[in-house]
Image (cartoon, chains in turn yellow, red):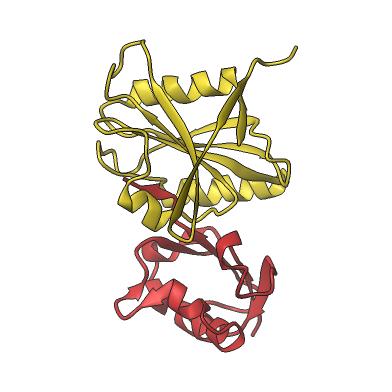
Length: 142
Length: 90
């Protein structure tokens, strides 16, 4: 189960809409071991593609150094699908490399850059195996 | 020669969960060979017959070795090597 605040979900969706029709991607970091996504970090999709995403390699090093310094880990790794459903593609599964992360997918295929309903789902991807999990959206406490 | 190598979570199964290990070598290729000698299996996760795997990033200090000389990049005592799998998909 992924527990995530409504504010963070809205940030993911906003980023996905902004980059549509290209895929958007990013991380939500949280204290190591907490399983609590807290810090929203949108990343540049270096592939700038509607069918592929990849963090820029220099940005990736900076991101992991920063998380290390802050004793954080990538609790959520998110990206968008812009023409297909919010379900991991074959390449998503092949390259998934954070067995402890929640892989969040959002699809903008229905509404594109416009507001409206969206599809957001979360998965664990471990050793090529995909397991969908419940997303519990929490209303941010004071 | 001693090189500090930072191991990503997904490869720590090879290093008994160690996050940072020491390796020896005067090039990235030699460092990878030394890692393989001490942590059998890890080498195959980093390289294939064409060289560095496409979705594995190896950094010498702050620089992606793809922007240097790849596996032939020279390393010196005290350097730090960081391995990070690409965050990528479709």
